[in-house]
Length: 386
Image 1 (cartoon, rainbow, N blue to C red):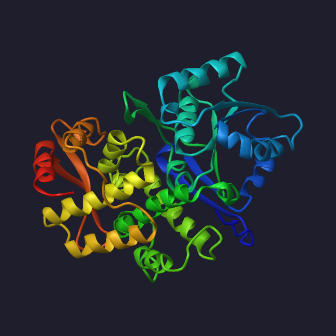
Image 2: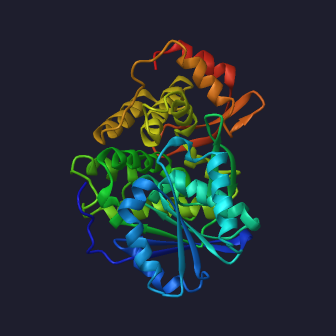
Image 3: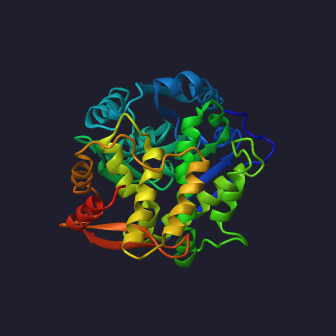
């Protein structure tokens, strides 16, 4: 992966969630984490850095140096092997035990240093230990920097199904530091691009229902252009792309912090995507599964006459240009049955129906409450070669 562009100044994004009387504070840019030196004194003096072994090897020294700028700070680390099972009850109990043994109080702070799984685990632990202690997110992957580490949703898995148990609990600060992306493998970069592309498929709906405003060109048009221009983290437009995604996410979360309405559009592609992750856990990472899930959503929408095959093909081209999969390889004969089983554990299921987020005729517009009986989805899946 290329070196990040560090010529741009750090940007602060703050947005209020009125009914929770809180602010979402995101600090964005190359080495933006350096701003933590002046903020850590307001967050007590004891910190637990939750991370994964591979991330700790690369980046704990960088984080520890910043925290230790104030010599009175106590910094502990709890590191896990990188795996899907990190988001389970055993890992959570390990965190609780560590906090208890090291006498952490309500005024102390958990720091999530890693990707989406670590942010979820740390967020759930912070929300529930002593009924809530301070939390800082330091996402280290592109996917977590523009999506998973933002917005306060924290979940862990149950019996192989994603995020069955969860909370909504917001960090005091989120540091989107591009320096971490310098060690990101190309596959993980493109996994993050899947979530960036997702925003282009929901941008117009977000602008209709929140304070986010469209630019002179749609995000979809911009990403299509960038897909032909060797877009990586040192590209001159990289920070603006990230800021666009963050602006959309923060405005949606501010409007619907409890995930009851417009925030559901952020799950575009995730109903199918999570099912694919559960069915093929060792084949597709999160972004790749979401890429395929978005194509499934376009296909389902075209079958229901909500969207068109032309839009489906445009989506395929954009995802393919960023090296993302658009279909499941080597389908097994039980694939449809496995998807339907996964749907039954989806958070958007109500009785025997499930609310899909489906694209409409204009790219960027979605229906985020399109209710479909699960049995109908099964029939549709069986009637077409996905």
